[in-house]
Image (cartoon, rainbow over the protein chains, first blue to last red):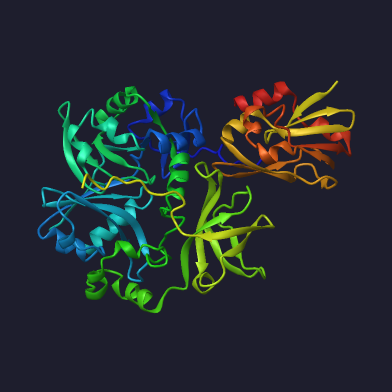
Length: 378
Length: 123
């Protein structure tokens, strides 16, 4: 067989939860420069389904946590990011992207307007952290302090029971709406907790000091129904939720308009500009884009992976799959990819070239599985 | 009596006379994780030693399966079309991939015994 997963790389870092992974018989793989669990002993499908039905813990400590402080911090950040702080309340989080001058995506990220109001807190992709820091240093003057937080682990607790579990540690967490964050205390440790995630389920991301991460995770694992889940389940969950993966579905050659991320850019920013990449984004919106990210359902059981060419009926290439695999929730293959915009107006059945087999597929909207975020007790 | 041989690439072949039954090893199926699809060779096609003949799709990735010997495919395991997970459950039994009429039994001497294979994966 071809070697899919048994190559090991040198000089990999470990997260503060390395021991927890080993204690729980994780299958560790190189990912973004770290040893991270692709799965534990129950396997990806079981971990996926457990997350949809109950609650799972994911180690996402490889992700970059960045704190930026300085005078008029919101004005400074609005020059870099297409967001409007006037519409973001303290304690709120927004999903956004760093853009280059061509209006393409350097990275996608979460940014929190903290209650302290003197700094913002970012969570960025692990692989992109160095170039994100460069981008920040190049575009913020020296009065701004940019700190890469290197002593805090990041744990995602995801699934419909995540709030029931977490409120046994932090009572107030129950009422927090989706996309808000705050500091909490537990056993004299400070936790920065965000209600968000990458699975489409209700859930939290918990930032804690490295030295306390293992102890806290083991306490969570003592709670009924809480299990560990790895990167494999994280990927199938986010695909079902139609969420983009940097490096696959979005990259420095893709604009947020092509990727269907227009919703993340407020109207007044498009009209008034004043951020890096504004002109090309505005043009994309005025003139339309040549390709768009869509959901793709291969008919039958054969999964179509990233790189698979998409054909029209005449076997002419009209697009490419950027993420693809198997959906444990739907028990069918699913994929995401780019298709020429003019095709989308009419045709909705296409062919996928999987190793020379032409597989019929349907174009669908995203997500494949409905989001279940907690919008608050209104 | 059937004899079993292994490749360094984690295929097995059980041979009786000049007929072989091929699958992937328990080690490989465990490394791949949950298997969701197997692309099997059609009856009558010719397999060449060391060349890809089938594809296993796990939740993680697609991996090619190389034929341990040359020959003609006489049967493939149709149960895998509806229940590919039996490769995880019983890789060296019910999870077989295809049956092959071996064209040259001398090729078997280049394969590993069970003991040699266990040593190989122990490295």
